[in-house]
Amino acid sequence: MLAAVFTADVPAQLAFGPPVIIEQGYQQIPYVVADLDQDGDPDILTVSALDTLAQWWENDGSGTFLGPWVINSDPFPPGDISFYYDDFLQVYDVELDGDLDVIYAFRDQGMVYWHEHFGAGLFGPRILLNACTASRGPR
Image 1 (cartoon, helix red, strand yellow):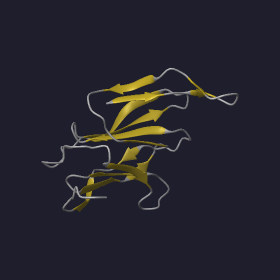
Image 2: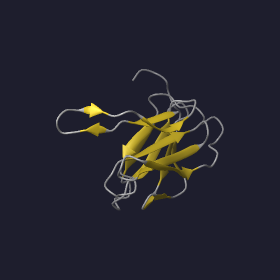
Image 3: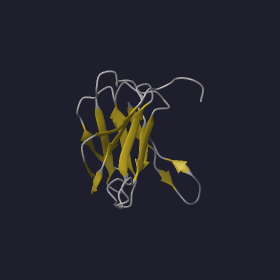
Image 4: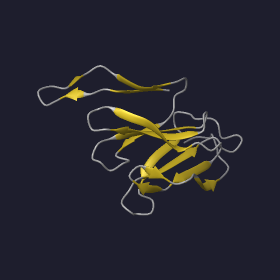
């Protein structure tokens, strides 16, 4: 995985600064940009089945990212170790309590997981929401 952030100087014209490497590795993984710690700036969330990590990087507001903060490092069940470009990672306020929870799915295994967000960037354990037979048929 290679996570990089480009900063922009606005308003005159859109010009990007050099990339800032946040994390480097060997696989492509899904990511989401969202304000996970509710401090008004965008953070970065990733989930990697290969090294069994759900983690996020906190934006300190100046374009510097702290972390990674590990949400979950429990091993996934056997067979849940592949991510493809169209696997699912999303944040959504599942229980409508005002903070963004983490939801992700493994397309090939038909697994959907959820981490409840307790606020301030603290998350609960991984909960299996659904296990079904996955299909690689037409979409």
